[in-house]
Length: 287
Image: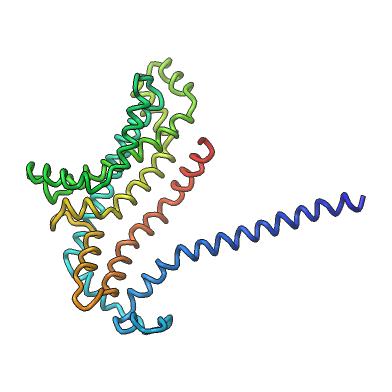
C-alpha cells in the first residue's frame, strides 16, 4: 500500500520537474533569438564611438540624434508608408486569390488538379532573381516601373502559392456536409464558399494574411530591382545605408532604421496576436 501511494507522488514530481525543464529551455531559446534584436535596439541609441569600444558597453549615455536625423528625412517616412501600402495590398490580394485557389484544389474534382497544384508549389523554388529582371523589363515597357501596383503584383508571385497550400490544408479538414447542406438550401458553390466556408475559416485566413504581410514587409530583392524612388520600401533604405560606406559601416544608422522598420511589425503582431494564436491552434487541431 505504501508503494502504491508513493508511486503517484513520484510521477507528479517527475511531471513537475519536466515542466520546469521545458519552461527553462523555452526561456533560454527565446532569449537566444531575442538577443540580436535587443542588441540592435541598444546599438541604435549609442554614439559611434561607443559602438566600437572593446569590450562592448552595456551602460552608456543614450542619444536620439540618429533617430532625429533619419526621421526628419522625407524618404524614410515615405518609404515606411510605401512599405505599409505594398505589404497590405500584396497580403489582401494574395489571400483573396490564394484562398479561392486553395478551395478549388481542396473541393473541386478536376483532372490534373493535383499536378497543377504541385507545379504552383514548385514555383516557390524558382530563384527570385530569375523573375525580378524579366519583371523589371516588362514593367518598364508598360510604363509601370517604380509603382506600387508593380511591387504588389511581384510579391503575389511568391505569396499566392504560400497562401494557397496553407488554406488548402485548412479547407480539406472541414467537413463537406457544411457545403452540401448549404447547396441543398439553394446556395451555389460560390454562395456556400463565401457564406459558410469563409466565416468558419476566418481564423486561418487572418493568420495566413498576417504571415503574408510580414513576408511582404521584409522582402528586399523585388523592391530593389523594381523600384527607384517613388515606391521604394524600408528594406531598400537599409540596403542603401549599408552600401553607402566610406569609412566603414554606419552601424548607428543601420540599427536605427532597422529598429524603425521592426517596430510596426511588433505593434501589428501584438494587436493581432489573438487571431494569430487562434488560427495556429485551429490549424494544429484540424490538421
